[in-house]
Length: 408
Ligand code: ASP
Ligand code: MG
Image (cartoon, rainbow, N blue to C red; front, side):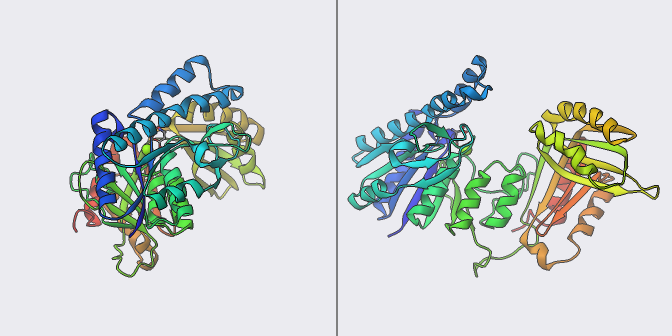
């Protein structure tokens, strides 16, 4: 007998018909003799709807964030009740829980709280009685019982955290796609659903724009060594199993996936004096403005000046440009330039550790397509490049086929 934490996303719970189908899945697992704890997201785009209402009132002000959490957390409360009622109607013992009722304790950083502790007593009592607990994802309470939410897409993280503290055999994330793909199937026709993947690779893919899993969920599952399975609510396929690398049965392809993001921009401060403290002087004000910096490249020229380039999300481009124009003066730089029509692409694979030549092959493939590489950064299991946005699909397709990702 196994214990599964099953999390269902918004598209899987969009209507009462969908909810019925989810209930059937849960009952089928239980009838096979397994124990199940369920985590739900809000229905469809409910959280977006609530967030828009909050925005209209001006809820960006941090003194409203406590109330924003009260509002946003209602979406998941609705689905816990609807699914639990459906399960009971279908002859199952089931019980709904808000985050606070479980209790999932978080810190007090409203709208971006972190889970500190989960009390498993009630859930374990339910498991022992054969009752299916249906827990609201994405929410908790702080030590003073204020309702908190843990960041958009956070019910994956709730599920991974519950699976970890319960010692579940698997954390199963049900979604509307078959699993984790080698790249976006809308861009590459031959994109394949991976049968397995490692936590490490998944962390890179999740933080690089593959939207299928919340990266904090992967971090937690990896830390507590709980396998995650990403699978479709709408089929019976096995999905993608994400585990530790040292699993013996795991084939290790060199590259397991290509992630890309289009909405990037880059900024360059030209002719910066090559003296200590300049990077901090440039990036300090940028980070003070809450603009997230991604890739950074700096190169020293013969005249002892440097060009300092970094990338930000496209929506932050104008704000970053304004800051740099001011900073450039302060640090004695020549000028500032920028480009907000770039995209980033990353090859990810644990096999890179033991195989040389991945980068040179990647660069050759891009050269063969006459695509100029504007920036490069690497980690042990990832190579990222920045290219002009208009070439991103061509680049992804060429690399997908050059690295044989379309073959089993
Ligand atoms: N409903 C929340 C959101 O849309 C949490 C989630 O779906 O994971 O962000
Ligand atoms: Mg989600």
